[in-house]
Length: 142
Image (cartoon, rainbow, N blue to C red; front, side, top):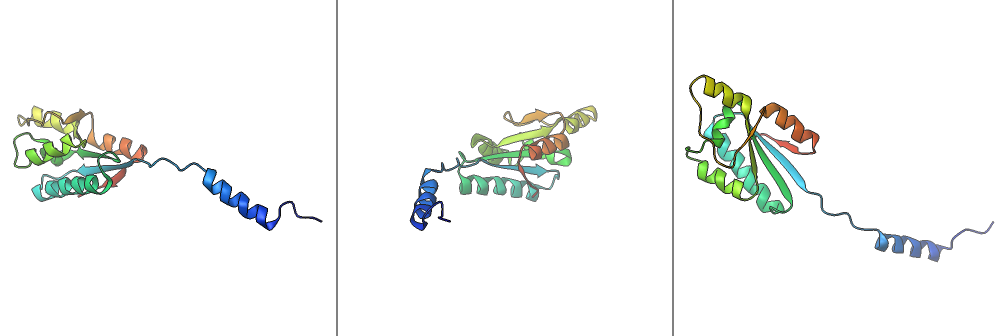
């Protein structure tokens, strides 16, 4: 029985298929940084992580979202020592989602906090974190 293709034809077929196969577009890297503590060093760590990701991947190739939940909502406070650093991140395309459940609880107890203008109010921080993971976001906790 005669082979369907000669060895030379097989080599050429493999080479041409590699050349003609379209290269997949670079996938967007997606990272969620979940902040649940009022600890300022952890807030700084979240800021450093976001900056490092943007530097490594480039802001065009990465989506970073900081989800502030529970005691972590302080990272979105407009009048704290890190507000300029957080605002700078937001200017580079980082999204800051703040838990509405926590904000409502703070307001009812008489302790509302002023948020950075670019902070996004979400209904619940835990739900937002789950939604992002379903969308393919990696989970990072400082």
